Image (cartoon, rainbow, N blue to C red; front, side, top):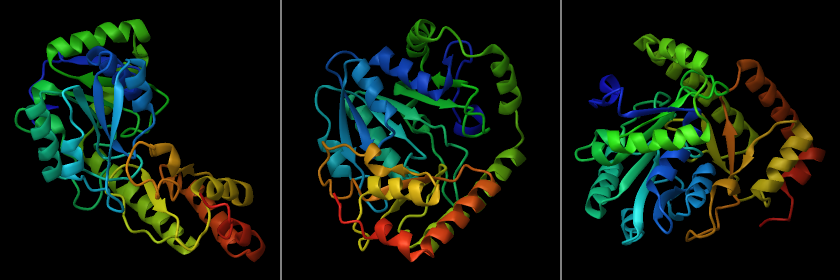
Length: 330
């Protein structure tokens, strides 16, 4: 925290070590959200946030990001606050879009949190996976934000150990204590042997992180070219994370669900329909069935195999016709 974000924290009082970021986020939500509290989330959003808020009997309130670059609309954001707003959830780099929130956007969020006296709960699991000139900035590092921000993160993405389930919440001591009290009721402890391994991972040299970015940049560029060759027009190149959130061309009269179903059936390649990340309470829902999330956190062999299968499908007129010309558009 000191090295990467300039934060002075006490390792004995300001952390809760949990079973992955998922549990850290759940425990943080249960610790600070009471019945009827409203929590702002940026849409599209990772699906587990809403469940945690509702289990805490809070009310999720979605603020749509503006496609195709998923920009923060300051007016929409500020108008979403009420006297019941208790927290803002920020995931950057962002799943599913690959957006990295800019310094200007983060300042808008920080100023609003301070003005409305609410918490920020961040999900920073992709903090070391950014591309080109994009840099991750932790919201807690901005003036006035450390005392009201709960950072959640994990080993899973940065060190490619998603099954180890080691994550953490970092917060002011009184909030971290409440999170630990919830944590021991949920899972008791994160796996002790993997916590020992985490110490090795967290002392990685800067060369490791440089190599991580380089490797993922190659994979990102590979899958972007693969999708372009298949017929996608990529309007937003991922700035971070391990996902491409690709919009179906307007000439393809097919929904995201049907496209993914046909892709699995006809090519044996899996992706995630974008509709699972959007929420009907937001304004313009016309794009909610037009995006597909592709993950490129795969081996070169897997990516090459997927590219081969999609090229083969694209070259098969008989199979492309039902894939691209399905009239069940919704």
